[in-house]
Image (cartoon, rainbow, N blue to C red; front, side, top):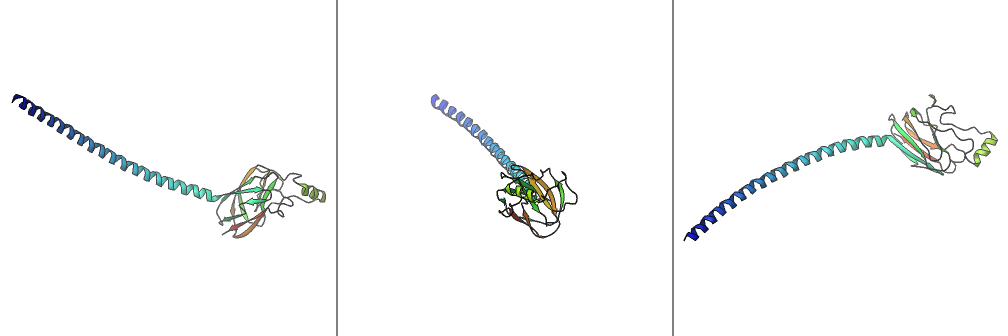
Length: 201
C-alpha cells in the first residue's frame, strides 16, 4: 500500500511538473508566435517601404534614362537609326564610335539649343581614300566646333565628331517639332548608309 501511495504521489508530482512545463512551453510558444508575427509585420512594412523607395528610384532612373540617348556609329550606319524626342525637353546625346574609322553625327536642319558640348576631335586631314580626293579637289570639311576648338554660341544644330573607339556627348533642347535627318558628313559615309532620323513631337 505504501508503494501504491508513493507511486500515486510520484505520479501526481510528475503530472504537476509536466503541467507546469507544458504551460511554460505554451507561453513560450505564444511568445515565439507573437514575436514571429511582429517580425513578419515589420518585414512586410520594410518590404513595402523598400518597394515604394525602389519604385521612386526606378521612376527617377527611367526619367534619367528617357533623357539620355545613346547612338552607336559603325561602318556604315547608326544604331538606333531613329530617335523620338519631345520639344522643349533637355536631352543628353552620347555618340559612341564603335567603328574603325572617324565618324560624326550631324543634324544641320534641326533647330536646337546646345546646353553642353563635351570635347571632340576635329575631322582628321585624311579619313579615307575619298578624303584624299576631296583634299585634291579642295572640298571644305565641316567641324563640330566649326574648327575653333570650342563650342560656338551660334551653333544651333547638332554636330558631333568621334575618333574610332571614342565616346562624345552633348546636351541639347529641341526647339521645333518635325522629322530631321542626321548623317555622317565624312565624304561617302552618308551614301554608304550612315544616316538616321530624329522625330520631335
